[in-house]
Amino acid sequence: MEKVPQLERTIGRAQGTILAVSAVVGISVLALPAVTAQEAGPAALVSWALVGMLSFPIVWTLSEFAIRNPTAGGVIDYVSSAFGTRCGTALGWTFLGAIPIGIPIVAVIGTQYAAHLGGWSGHAPLWLAVGATTFSVLLNGLGLAAASRLQMAIVGVVVALMVLTVIAAWPLLHHDSLTPFAPRGWEAVGEAMVPIFFSFVGWEMIAPLVEEFKNPRRDVRVSMFIAAVVVSIIYGAFAYVTIGTGAYQQGDGVMAFPLLVERTIGKPGLAVITTLACLVAFAALHINIAGYSRMLYAQARNGSLPKSVGKLSARSKTPLNALLLVQVLFGATYLFIGISGIEIGELIKWPSTVFVFAYALTMAAAVKRFSKEGVVWWAALISLLLCLAVLWFSRWRVVLPLTSFLLGLQFGQRSTAQSSHAG
Image (tube, rainbow, N blue to C red; front, side, top):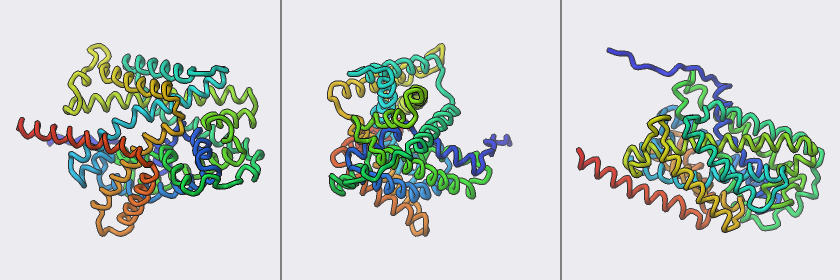
């Protein structure tokens, strides 16, 4: 009998922690502390603390799922195992509807920093974002998709930028910036948790790597738990200096980071750090365009999207039609931002609501799968209730994940019917 090839087990606890941190940290966290403080005042610090605390039972639950059911399908397979394939397919559709909003936001944050450095105003950040997206699509079309190691470099730069800013800004902290503490009431604290959740998404990405851990049952949960501590501390410290220095009171909130850097390091340092932030934003955009186009390609292959979307280039063997669809979807988001004038802080609540919905459904799956199993069941139940609480504060924005989910259920039913008929 031919031996089934096995992945090499090379990941230890330290590397697992680094991988978990890299799955979560992104450039959006450079803008969100100021954006949320403009919404809730200094009380946004409470919002950051609450979402940080929520990450721990979520991490505990997801690590248990990863250990028991190591799969590249991640949360989609977790939900399918509890509620059926149609429900898992519907969740996949929900994610497909969120990425064309979430990733362009990352691009616009980076291009706003570039426009600030260049002294450009008006719609310059949007045009730069369109140009960056087009360039990335062209690169992906040539088969030059970024390797996963680039994501590690991105995270290293983002974390370094945050730590450097915290250290440099610490002497500028003053208590006057923390008063009044909750100028818009405590309900605003709950509403601020919705966009913050966007910065804590990514824990489920460790699941496909479980088979490569030297000792999965011992190290996966510990690695993710340590990563949750590291991420919460870094995020908390960065939010504290952004709010404690009063930097969030300038502009629309997104620009608080470069303004804070300029105050602490000076213009020469601003040029270097802003350039790094722009490069990080483009690298993140490029990686996600590569991944999202492959998701569309996979959906086309299994019949959930038109077959033409799954067509490969004869020369580069890349999904050109899927990449063109990405260009159109991302372009629609840029067009909407330009016409509506919507602020990034408001727009980011939409994809964040999708992720809260997805995590709530995943935690519900865990409650069902781990029924009467002690700590993990309680962690899943607590996570579910807290996710539902955050979802409540998303208000009518929940229509986006619900609509995508219902469409996914419909297409899942159609695909199942076609499979049964073919059989």
